[in-house]
Image (cartoon, rainbow, N blue to C red; front, side):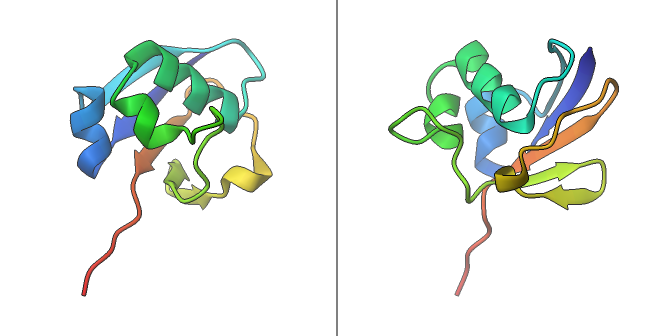
Length: 92
């Protein structure tokens, strides 16, 4: 299946692109997708998506279409999905 991934903020710089289409095996979960993206792009994107144990970082802002999704729920992605990945916004 194919999905579109959009990268925002610092993650866009780390990925070296704002948007790309990615081929995934059918039934891929959100967590598996993040791990694959980290493997495809290597550092520094892997350092922004995965923790020291190689697991996806829970604090990422993730959207499927217009709906924010939680990594803890680890949804299965569907063909044609649009995944947006961003870092948490902080300010003062």
